[in-house]
Image (cartoon, rainbow, N blue to C red; front, top):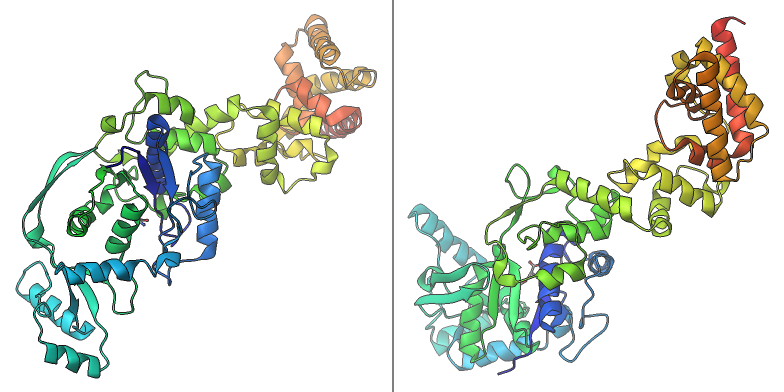
Length: 488
Ligand code: GLU
């Protein structure tokens, strides 16, 4: 018996990496990290029709982006490879033969039509369908006849009828009546293994010690345990995680929002926030501090403390958490991530320094990176639309504020934050003294003129990013509008 802890994530590449699979991967990864174990990635692509290379690439990229790096896998190899099931097709028949030889399996020559008929009968009799075992004891002659007819057999596992008990790491003791299972196919007539068979052979040969996966697989576990037992192999520990449900308690699906990790990323979610968020689906930190890195979570993580019930995927909470990550992220890194969301703008207008400044002063209210698209339009181009602020800019107050601003700003140094800050403060104070205007009223007029909005980022930052030329140009435009409105 080996004491080495080996866990795996075994996605089927029939779609992009689902957020639920990301959580399963995370819990396996954390378990390995915590115990000094090995985290294996295996691609389960036995279903050739549904498999696509783009999904395999997406699974690799998404897991990497989430920081869930594997120790063994298709791309990096390892002692127990290959790690892609379609490259292991020569392995499975050997073990199927072993089960046939030992009497744990038998050939099934039934045609699809015959099987369909059995199923229909079960429906008519209001019974749960289990295979009739019709082929369990066929004679040599019948077998030869089937071969002559060109039939190809599948191989069925002979299910031993008993009460099967195992201790689930998450759910505790689980009991199954295996007589309800029915002899299931382990090798299809086309020579490919079924999921339940391939998974056991691979987990066994890859020496997987703990299988942590979603509870949607719980009905497969007794079948798999029976195969381990028949092969005389050590049965690994199992832990089944509750499902992730949508806020309306139905299965999380695309109609609720993004479900694939890459879709969340496209929507402007940070992978650090995503991984932190999914960790909290079924697990709670021992302190009340929810914002944690994967390494911090690993310190606190105990598999037997995972909740056995389903978790609700609260998009609102993810939004909140994403906002928190945006607020505290390193500006240069954040800018790199935001750039793809600004494809509608001519970024060459701004130096890298100004771009980072723009991100710094506009990130506060962001929920997703995508949100920035609307918030930064006024940093680009010479003109800004003034429709929203027309009324504000038509007042006597605006006239005075803009005239004074134009006069003073011509002499200001737009490169120095501190001086600019003081100049602006002086202007506000002067207006208060001279006219009694509230400082914020003065600023509204200036902000409206140069951004076309009444609210937004820090003014000093805006002025620095726009620079003198654009600022004066826009101020003049607003003054023209003001003159027209006042009829002067
Ligand atoms: N390939 C299976 C899936 O994607 C997972 C198998 C397992 O974890 O046992 O659902």
